[in-house]
Image (tube, rainbow, N blue to C red; front, side, top):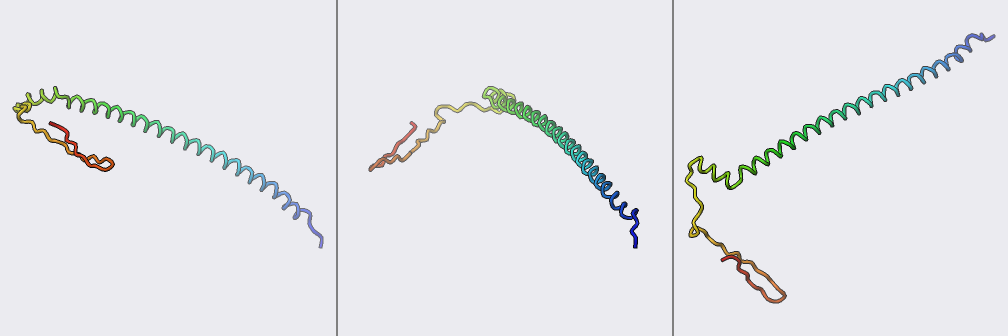
Length: 119
């Protein structure tokens, strides 16, 4: 049986075409992957910038709140507020003070001593 030359040539012509198609798919896939990764990096950068601006705003608000709290806790401001509300609060008289003595044990090498602090 004689072989037909055209049948053998189809397999030979199909291999280079398959290689070319496979190479195009690899290059195209790599390009698409690259673009997707660049878009993801860009989007993450935008998210980071947005969250940093939110963080700065929160830090500013926190500082403003801390300053306001410090102003409200000032003794002069508290005394003024007491007068506004007419609470009738006055500073304690020296006879109303109670002194508490703090007793602490201090141990040395062989002896134990008691120390008393306060009036």
